[in-house]
Length: 241
Ligand code: NAP
Image (cartoon, rainbow, N blue to C red):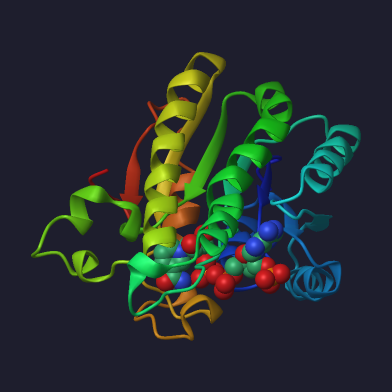
């Protein structure tokens, strides 16, 4: 055991669940966070049966009260948090004509992918500061990389979803801002692209496995917390913003 704790949002399934498993195997005590405790309990039981140290934590990242209650519980139980992985995310509607994506749908995507991340990060900051040096990982997407989506030779430039792509570009900017603000407090903030991964998110059309996706995120989460953050990685290589 490392004696360190990690919290992963949206960890009841898919990439978040596998990331929790890999962090657990690396010796971290896991806060397995999910918005539905029924689904979350089943996931936590699976990892507990594998011998990992797991506690279930209800968080709907789109809900102020839910996030505040979760932070209060971790404050009472641990008083600190070593690693926060903001994984929860939604795709929204991927329409044939992306320019017609309804504003309300885009608003929901931002509520989870952008404001949800800011909400959770701000709520858990006192706990991360108490554990410093500490780490925050944002699970972004290659579709948020403007460097890739504007490069006609890169396959990410062929996928144009107004709400989702722009929400992940916004998340990348949010990462840079938090990284600058939190470096003096001993908190490293980096972004991970899990790659196109077969999950419910995309009807299991991705070419990567959740094990591969989780490995990249877990690797980044375990890098030196005192290192200079504000970076974007796919596996162990840096991605252009
Ligand atoms: P997924 O299979 O759809 O799982 C998403 C997870 O997020 C679920 O646990 C879901 O909970 C949770 N979630 C959604 N909204 C939430 C909310 N408001 N509060 C708390 N939890 C919430 O997606 P995934 O493929 O694992 O994606 C995980 C992350 O990787 C996302 O941020 C996604 O944008 C990113 N990503 C995925 C791919 C890919 O190809 N799959 C590629 C690049 C980036 P419920 O089970 O309750 O719905």
